[in-house]
Image 1 (cartoon, rainbow, N blue to C red):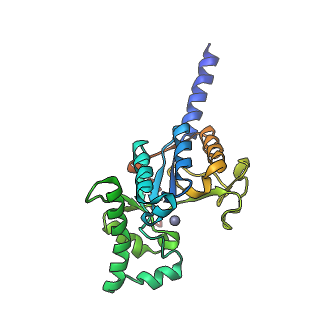
Image 2 (image 1 turned 90 degrees about the vertical axis):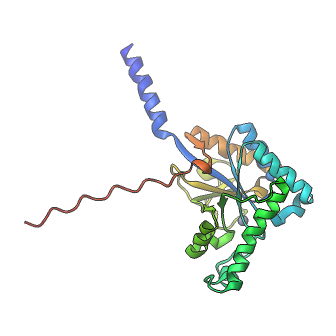
Length: 251
Ligand SMILES: [Zn+2]
């Protein structure tokens, strides 16, 4: 009896020890693939965050098609973030050419317009005038420029980079760990398991049609490993590591 109780305690303790929350984020939608991702998240009872690129409407049947997908995303309990109205610039060189150090009016205007237009266009799809995104992620290499990330935050949005990226095997050359941890068909850019609190990057288009099953197997695998999938609204930065105790004074 005592032994059984101890075993139950041990099992509960190890389940708690393994439980980790990560944040599943999907970029560039709505685009072909977004509804497949939404289907899988719904069937698996999992939360996601969609960083939207407003200028991609034509790929989903125009403004009406775009509105329908965004409204469905919200109705199913997911969160939205801004990924700029136009998915340009993307490379470091492109960012420097377009926005430089944000010191001229032209640089600042160009930067602000790309984000403000996404607010207003997506607001129109939602029929919410004055809509503003709470979260943002600059396309491509944007996150590597601290002054641009700071400007996004000055505009009232929390900027989210990512710590790990997944895609079907072979679609991105930098994703080198094919069949990541034995999940057939899914590549990961980092070979280890995500840590508690990490943000994970996906692109909607990669999981269209039959590829949606790859996303499902990854999500099921992560669930088995004790992961839960959080909301960015609840995200908190990892607590700072405790400072080392001061060295004792020299004798
Ligand atoms: Zn993107």
